Amino acid sequence: LAELFSLFKPGSPATAVDHCASAHLLPSQCTHLVLAKNASFEIYAVRRSETSTNGFLELLIQTELFGVVEGLGIVRLYGNDHDSIVLYFPGKFSLLELDPTTLSLKTIAIHSIEEPSKGLFPRSQSPLPSLLADPLGRCLVCPLGGPNLAVFPCRPVLSTFLMDVDPNLPRPEELIHPVPTLVRLGERLGISGVVAMALLDGYFDPALAILHETEITWTGTAACDHNTRALTVVLLDSARTFPVVWRSVRLPTDSFAVMPVANPLGGVLVLTPNALLFLNNTTRVGLSLNVFADPLNDLTRELHDAQMRLPQQDLLPQQTAPDLSAFNPEKKMFFPPEDFDMTASTFTLTLEGAQGCWMSPHELLVANRFGDLFLAELIPDDSGLSLRHIRLSQVGTCSP
Image (cartoon, one colour):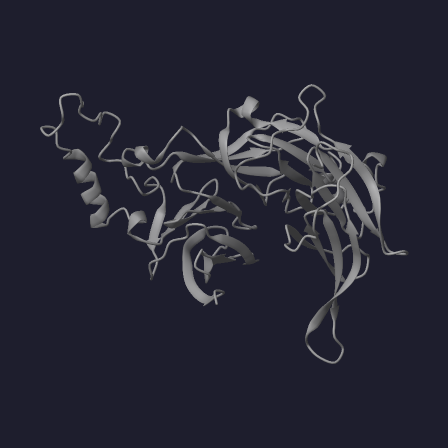
């Protein structure tokens, strides 16, 4: 309704939280919790109790919006000592700040990314995140469906070098109203079938890691090739040339998420149901979680042998023999290429439908569909610049 009519009224109050973020909306050290529930918007202050060690939430703002919030991001504009809020509606961005004198929301800018000839971009059908934040606070990226992106800049084009020289430089006028730009990666790079995205740390320009399909697949093709996805890292440079920094192909078809790893390791951690895969421009390290990710197990060999021994004499007259010309017996069906240095987990599990959250730069908390919690630790070498192996341990459960 919000996309078709100027009047929007929800039928009932929202009860579930759609978007959540923590921020420092005031110059003080107080932490704020920002929630978006359908068309409801709330801001809480996290307070510390003076009599006990427990904290509590103090409601500062609760308001109803004329539209459903589809994306929520926190940015810090160049020269500010507090954070700002970016709300994304279908085809529109709103930049908000919290007024410290009146404790009310103040609209800084409103931008539209609609095309007059085509209208709104189609919504993405894959479970992509609504807004991606750059680790260095340079921009926000909003997936618009398929390979189309909206990049919301938070700093000037040449600010990376100038801020290192003098952080007290005056703020240019255009920084007050940053304008989002459209990026069509499908037309420039030929990327389609986007599965997941993440902004990486440690690059001069914002680097976007894209997990995507390289060929059309379905369940019946798993017997011939199970590694049909690729990871492409693209720089979102100011010249809009979008160069490809590095690329890794032949990742498992069931790869479903990418988790950015902070410096000095850098790179990404790819989540698959059967393995954890770490990738950067020089290192490939993996942890197999079950027999389907072990290249040396007997089950994989038996599956290969069974495919090569398909019966030919029992076919009906109207049937033809299966075409095995594309099947390579040397190709591992359930495992990435040989350049991964794999180790086996001490216990067996599957991460289908799992969700991950970074607890520290080297510790990822993963929750599977059964409510079990696992801690994946990235163990670097003595130099701290390269990954040695991945260690997984179970830390608890959140199911009743």
